[in-house]
Length: 177
Image (cartoon, rainbow, N blue to C red; front, top):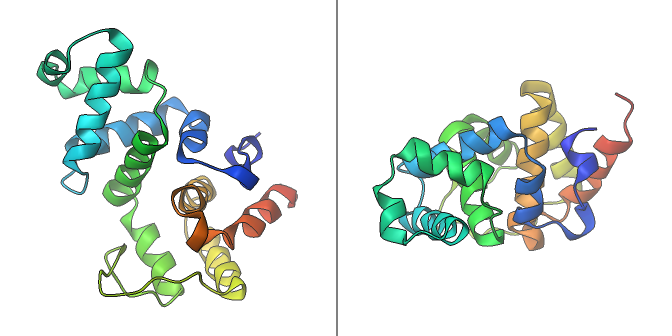
């Protein structure tokens, strides 16, 4: 069973997405959170606080741990809330999957700088036909598992803008393998 089949697409949050990720993808996301300049300092601090709470450590003790150890704890021991899961998913995509982001936004004609929506652009929900077309193209050009995760992450992070992707994801589930 793939990622999409395990997700509650009707009420999807970032925590749901994180919970269903395999350990390797979680590790990549956690490493990206700690190592990437694209990640926010608040996201890293939130991760350290979550690790400290889970292990009954003081936050300062967690910050002294090597990144590899914090990544290990974050992947194996912490169940992130939606805020932390959002930071992790953003870090994964911004650090490791920018070509996918850039391709999707470009296909939707959303002004972007290497996958980041330009700050001067007022983002509105894209038309359904455009979403379907852009998603189909992504699936042709990129690994299906990465596209599934990216599109599900968009819905989880901003349902108001990306709710038009829910039928696209449902169609992926219903499509024969």
